[in-house]
Image 1 (cartoon, chains in turn blue, cyan):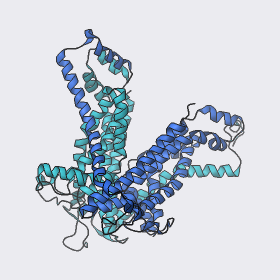
Image 2 (cartoon, chains in turn purple, cyan):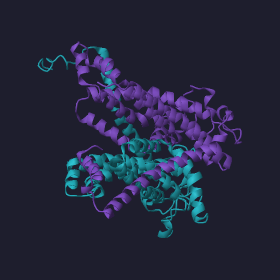
Image 3 (spheres, chains in turn brown, blue):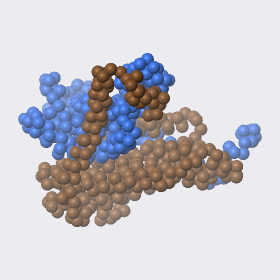
Image 4 (cartoon, one colour):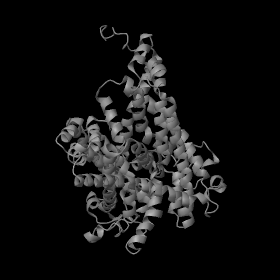
Length: 303
Length: 317
């Protein structure tokens, strides 16, 4: 913080004539140390969590884990179906959520008039962020499995996750669209382009790196979500990659498999195999996050 | 349309058919979120409606136990929602007791005390915590936090599944939410207030606790309410670590407050019941949605309350 007030305060730390009594200073010091400790507690728990998982599961990360399907025997089981299921979900969710999210952001940011519908849509996007993810699962389960009679299939899971992350993508995309300077749009309009042409050839390309970053971050959130697809009908041990693009087939995903392993009574499953599955999941998530950070740093433009 | 409104070529609507179609597609995407909400409300309340044609709404509110799996005619059948709400609240309470002090302290420390270099490391580290999948946190609660509690307090006191360890881990998960939202609220307090206090000779601690904190209070309360909404709706941690046995509320009040005995939350009931392949139209199937509707209404209420507080806080300056 570089506010005048805090500068003044920093000054008083060094100039003796503004210093308060030793007793007061000791109390201030205790307060600050207390704050620091409280802040560090969460970081320590995070470190404990990571160390715990790596020490439990690192020994189990071997070839079997990647090549085998779920088995009754802990030493033979693997997360192959989870990996292919998660990757298929990722591609399907990206294919659905990205275009719809960008279109919605373009509409709300570039074209929407300020009327009742627009305000309703905007308020709605904010409210949807507070709906628990398990309720999205009920939406997928109730409408697609219950009413429309789909099987508990890959496509139902993908639609559920897409609806879940759509608000996140819209908010991120709107922010990067807003950062595009008005002069660029005016330049395009002055050259005779129509508003739609300006939006697709000038505004959107200028904002695209931010849009991609937001989408990847939203996707990495979707991949870690367990409750919605568990409720919307993911299953535990189906060999999902017999037909990789069988969108109407039953499917599983990495976090679903982790949940299944933790629920089993044998400690080899509950502790070791689960931790190994978690390591695979976390590596996937962290690499997606790094791609997002790389994109942000590589393509951030200043106007 | 009159020619006057069309005279500005920059805002002129294009006559091209393709562009009109594109415009309407964009507009449809923009309104899709409304459709999502309509879908959620429709499916939850439609199934809940059928549920209440078969079981009485009064027993939903007054039964002291939640035993929905037997047939409604049997004596064991009880359908009180409050045992599930009790489970949800006890986990939420533990989570908030952990998260509020840690989150607020982190916010104050990061906003006003941390050196820029420390802040640059601590803040993203906290954000990593917010990105850990909840199934991983559930694993951690069950396999690390519960054994720790059991070794400290004894296996007799602490159940293998208990709301305490689920709540502690959930509280840690919520710290970043509270910290970042209340930090926003505190840095939105105008500097003139800080300078005024410093001008009167206040110490930094006094400025933080007696000026900034009260001035940002409604923003901070909003952050806490939003975090509560997340705790109420959290699923995987409780499904793994808090248990699957709703308490009978006719037990003594003291026993109900015991956070070491297993409970069932609304969300963990949904997860448990949905795996049972209940056919559409059965009471079990409909009960999933009735519980979902209750959960939805509770989180919606919390969100609306949070927005009220945010609005009040914005108007102050």
